[in-house]
Image (tube, rainbow, N blue to C red; front, side, top):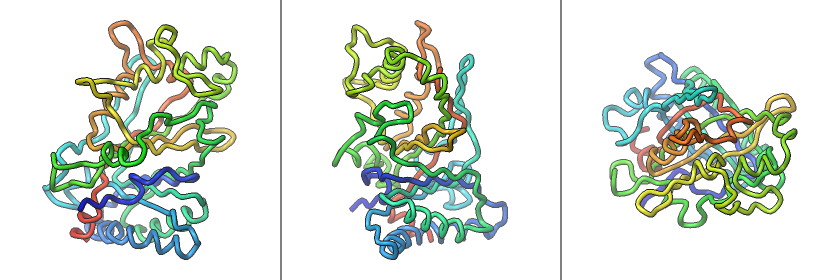
Length: 306
């Protein structure tokens, strides 16, 4: 029976914490990380019970550069570093990240308690390079005011989209994860008329209806990221949340997938102009400042490598 880490397929929490870390050079670092990773699935409900939050879930993933140090030569078939992209003024950078810890639930205090314990246990073995606390905004909208993740898979489809299957049996139940932190220029966005905002997104702002094909620009966000191949739409499972302070804010984007290919194709269509000169015009109002790729293995894999 396939047993994925809990945070992958669980419905997104009201609050989330995203930790990115780099592995220490010390030869003792790898065993510590393996022990912490193996303990996380039991530690998470323990913290949840302590604080009365049964919905507390977590997942831990590992980057391509450190996989051999942690687990040897056997690796997920498609695991690769995050590929930086650039075209004109638009860029999607690759930034340091060996470990990803994803935590979410309906309570920020429970998320915080678990994140603090994970970081404590990793002290000396891994260095925290980014810690983002996300929150659900205005009933599931991005800070732009538009509903986020309208077509995210639901129910059993979440596992079908997110989890590796028989195509890579040694890593079945795992998932490829990609993260990016976007910084919004809300001042510029809020100066734009609603019609321009809707053209950039491809949906109506008030009631979240997709614009008709006759009026939806080829540069709209959903026109760029909705891709069909062989009659099937490419899908990813999104777990992003708004984040930030009053001075810097945006969207922390996290996508899980059974393959890294759909995410990579979507991002390329956002950043790079096509033959008609079209790119994702949402990038006129927001920019990614981080980018990293990971594989989040199954519970069975974590148990056998502690």
